[in-house]
Length: 362
Image 1 (cartoon, one colour):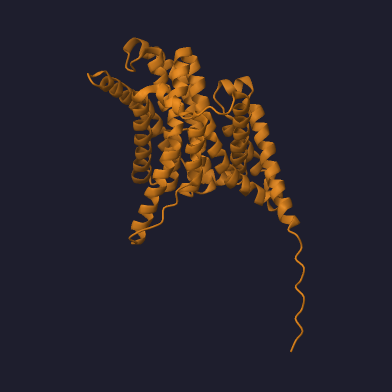
Image 2 (image 1 turned 135 degrees about the horizontal axis):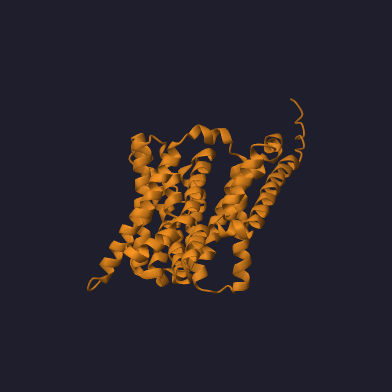
């Protein structure tokens, strides 16, 4: 009978912790740099948010220096891209309150809801059937165009489970066309003064901007070029649109679970309801109570911007430029179709909802 040998001592995972810290630190440095650049007057005035800048910086480093240190920093970069993203989405709710919905009114909520659903469905239909894109790629471009640009794409990534290059391409399209919108919408307002296609004057045009322009920063930049009244109504309409992100992700998760079950020939499938979407809703409800003073909410939202910027930077670090080039022109064409729909369809929806609201009993 052999004498039992004592267990071999296990060395503490110092290497793993070092890799985690190195990757998180790299993402944090890029996130801080993106936030600093996002405060520059020219970039801020042209609607370049810290999130868009962070992914650009990440891709710059990711396609030059990062391959040499990826083995060391990889775990921390993945942690930033996954865990910190979900935490950031939860605390994104500190930017919103239930009172925002009341401020924009029932008609404004209906406009946002119709634009979000129609844009996403159009993206799936045109992207898959006409352009032959993968469903995940079409969904991400549709979500980014429909809701709130880069933040929506990143929030949907864990639900859709897309590849890094698909996420990056989707973000690139919404940033690009959203930037075009900053210069186009003030021109459209000048035209609208003569033809009044969008009702409600400057305030009504602000709701039109908030319900159709991609990112929050781009909405602010475009609306401020129109006027103060447009700026106020545009931001509120956009915030309500952002608020739709969480219920949209829950609904999308349930729909994807049913779709996968049908494709596999199963009767039932467990739906993966994203916890961070529920956390986002809970944070909005908590923020609506106004228990936290502005002196606390302000730094928390800045911290949340840093977390999201770190996630964007980490995504950029793991995206190869060759994969984006390989995607070809079809994602750009889909984003163009959606951009045209947001402009033209936004006029029709805003005009139609305003007409219905004006009816007796509306």
